[in-house]
Image 1: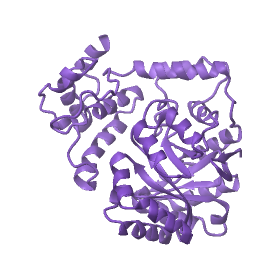
Image 2: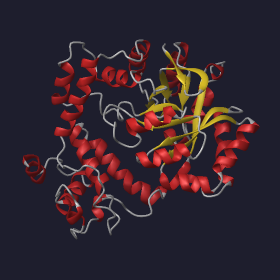
Image 3: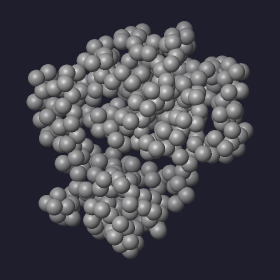
Image 4: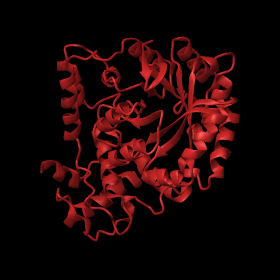
Length: 398
């Protein structure tokens, strides 16, 4: 196993971290025997960073790890879990959730405690409730050692959050596609320049990069060095000195064995200049597969009906880019669940809410016929309709 420095801390962390969000399952529950075998196998081969969170596996991930890490395994790893930011309504909730998580994990402390999935609104609420002061007190009590956050928002929000506390670590969605999305490369480098350890999540974009469409695979196949798409994706991350650890949510022993072998061969500067040029070609090929030329500028927002127009367009495009329409439908369905059940949104952001008023189209620099696309997107993603449409074919010809 290769090890890397963890921000400003005098710690050596395994290049590969084990994310406990996609553990093997059987009959809808964690397959404890197989998951435990995988956790022990990983630790025995040098993995020393384990990541979980309050909601993973419908709340069962932490409790499972509490059982799996018995027999001395807890002492061999750095353990991270996360406060469910969206659930926090009062300052008393900080202790309530942490105490429950420590009981689930059967530990007196965790090494790293992260504020989960921060965005601008959730950070403002937690900050105003005194989460920074609470964290200082709780670290002094020894219930967790270091505070960090995981993140899903834009770069400006990321930089604001980084600057408003002396964090130890941050966790960002970052991969060979997301160089300009969310925190992106700028965020990675900014956090590292401030001394933060940077933990990478979604290195394979939720599995979308594992089986590229033929035009993308042809680019990888043109390289003199043959690697699997997984290897190309992971080595691109490990090649960057600002990356502290790459998390992988592994569901099978085969995935674990492959990732361990890749981690063993990882390092900064492993990729040649010629190989690095391939990544630009791959991104360009992926972009060629989209139907709607949205740049994410958000000039179309806000929508009077509450529709998150750029996100709906992006979800539809991603289903085309990666050949994953079912994943796109799942994401679209989650928008409604997040509104009606979880209360994450205060309105329905789906394309279904569009009334075709056309107001957004006057603001769109790309002249996208948004009011025509919204019912197409809802038909394809919300009603399992056809993903390839006449409108899409017309858009591709432009």
